[in-house]
Length: 152
Image 1 (tube, helix red, strand yellow):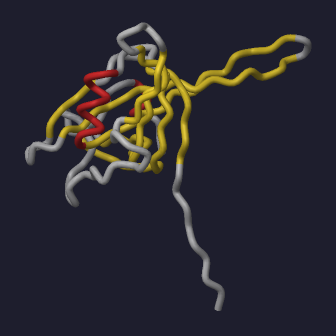
Image 2 (tube, rainbow, N blue to C red; image 1 turned 30 degrees about the vertical axis):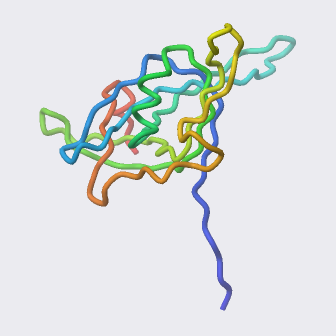
């Protein structure tokens, strides 16, 4: 019998499409929602066309608080995490579906120090990912937009 491992890992390098949104769970855990754009150039004939993908990213705990404090629309970030598919009911009782990246590490790549020089900052404060994780039964806060109507 063969033994296979599985891997669910996502790495994104992109810019925030809007300011971070922070909320707190009933247990007090910080939950920050980020909207991250990644782009690539695709050759179409003799021209190149820019294609942008949007990603929902959920960050928990102290990383969420740091993201909310230090990031803003347009910030360049590097994110590591895992992809998650989930469903929920909106305020009208309709079933909604979403795909999101649950982050275990966020690096802020374009912050400036007091002298105006760009510097990098990793939200966990050191070179290893944070142990901040949602409580076992805690659901990430959702970002409502038209993508919720996708049929998957």
